[in-house]
Length: 101
Image (cartoon, rainbow, N blue to C red; front, side, top):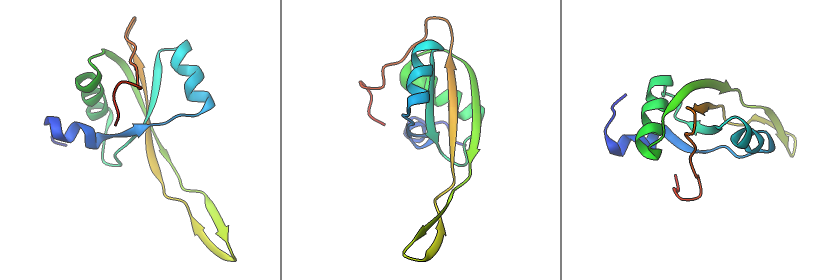
């Protein structure tokens, strides 16, 4: 993928906020993001370091399969997506409230 400044915001779509991710953000200095389906670990690390200015120590990527749903007798699936667990180096923490993705 290209690594120009405009493309960095296409790699990181939005932060993923849940009870589990909020707990891990404080304990382990880890944040979770929805990322582009075409992004890999190197792209995510580069984008986070450039946007937030923090050093990333580890990136784990998970493909989340869509779940089956029914609505008024019509079967379907939710959209599949990709998320990235980003762990920061010692003392490297980010504030998601200051930057809107």
